[in-house]
Amino acid sequence: MYQLYRNGEFVYVGKADKSLPTRIHKHLRKVSGRTNISLSEMTFTCLYVAEDFSALAPEKLLIKHYSKQGQIPWNNNGFGNNDPGKRRDETVVKANHFDNLHRIDIDRVLSSLPQGSMTLHKLLPAAAKEIPYTFRYLKKGCGDTYKTVIDVPADLTINHFFEIIAAALPENWQIALLPGRAIMYPDSRRTYPSVWRYYRGKQVLDVDPEIEEAGEILDEEEHDED
Image 1: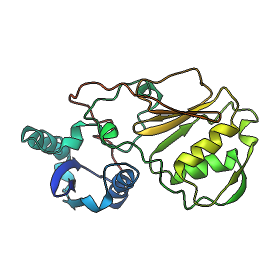
Image 2: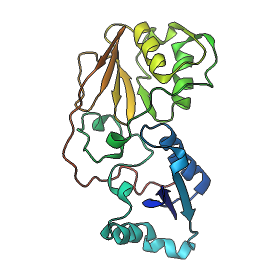
Image 3: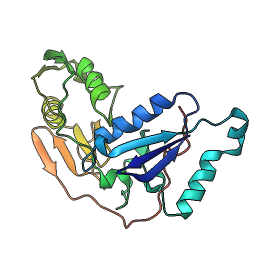
Image 4: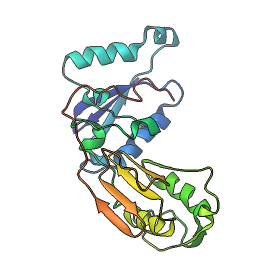
């Protein structure tokens, strides 16, 4: 079991049945890729639970206990590491959702990307690995689209990366920025209710996303294990 704190406030409780360091690293990596929050604000504590006790689901007990006390807000506002999948792309994000409070940071520099000429086939997975949030894109049935060669400059930000990629894609493709992830598909006529920016060809279109009133949110990753 572990507990996350932001500026001393108890915000999240979770469990890691396999690797606690891996679990914590995933959470901190996510925080590092968001706006309006900093890694310097985060601390954690942990507790090792005997195997026999795990059958009592201590995570659920702690969530129920601390939620009643008005604590662990991140257990009820969508904080998690997993990509919720395409079915959630059409969801209107609630006002108190973690993704809405802390949008993805697109000004971050992709410092580990190799410079020079590279095909999209090699560039996309390399960038997706370094971007500290989900960058989901079509991987099958792309024809020759990913054979396009891109010149990767130094000090490339995520925003500039998306601009370069969108400009090199066929006109029916688009990159859409949701509050918590980026998606890239050949669906330029499709709109998503919570998207705040589209990259279509050489156009960058900022839009006002739809936002639902605050309410309780089921955490997509609440009981996921590492």
